Amino acid sequence: MKTVQFREALREAMNEEMRNDENVFLLGEEVAEYNGAYKVSQGMLDEFGPKRVIDTPIAELGFTGIAVGASMMGLRPIVEFMTWNFAILAADQIINSAAKMLQMSGGQYHCPIVFRGGNGPAGQLGATHSQSFEAFYAHVPGLKVITPSTPYDAKGLLKAAIRDNDPVVFLESEKMYGDKGEIPEGEYIIPIGVADIKRKGTDVTIVSFGKIMKVAHEAAEILAKEGISCEIIDLRTVRPIDYHCIVESVKRTNRCVVLEESWPLASISSEIAYHLQRYAFDYLDAPVMRVTQTDTPFAFSPTLIEEALPNAARLINAVKATLYRN
Image (cartoon, rainbow, N blue to C red; front, side, top):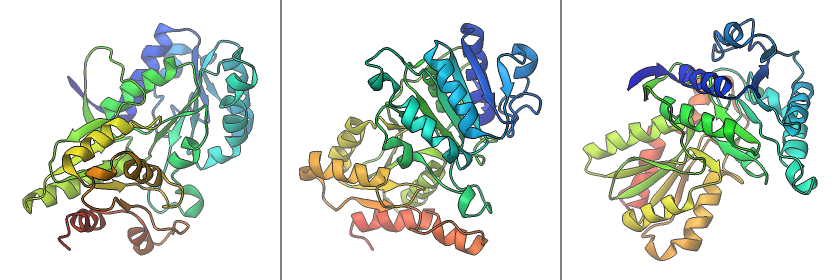
């Protein structure tokens, strides 16, 4: 095993797949000459050249459309968005072209394409640069949506996404690129749609994904000192969701809290809560609890940011509520 940053794990995945398949290429704003806005693509232009590592204009709708067309013709583009907030402009191509192409063409055209970039709040960036898009894209049939929380998962899942014949939305975070973790020396792939139990526990199941997983682990450590044993599930993929993993865990713990960095209405946590009451109702000893961002546009003020985001204290209170210890 070796220790790498999150950005390095992503780069290794892209490098390996581009070496293995000449149809794979990377395009996006500042991915080539500048080595990527967050240095994810550092050195890739030198190795693969300007025909496979392509700087684009600041025109998300335009270069996303080019990538969709290229994927229909047999290429396998990786589209990097500087942030998914900017990619709202490309939603027409992602949702109306890439996601629907296989169905609309009667199976004649696949769209093997990966859309990736920074997602979610990342400090004082204001309301229009701090949105979490997991539920937004998970709502769309035809897309697969991945949101890893560790360098290990990031590399294995990105390789799987690049090889997949369906369009994949791959959600990262500016605040994760410097995170360090261990990955194997050799090649490995993580299947899409398989959750991971990051921590075994007996009293309550905490379900989460993406960088907010850090809050889940922080809260679990604090609760352990109080004698409360938390099982933590990292979904890793939010379309498809590994419902089986969640249900089987709740059958053991009889309680569940879902932690999510996005807004509460029509969220991933809403979907999980519905699924548990439908398929694990008889095992629940308490209502499913949710800890989400507040239902407001994101603020610029640090004080209001602190109030808006899920944190360990709110998660601990939710866990204790399911145990009737508040």
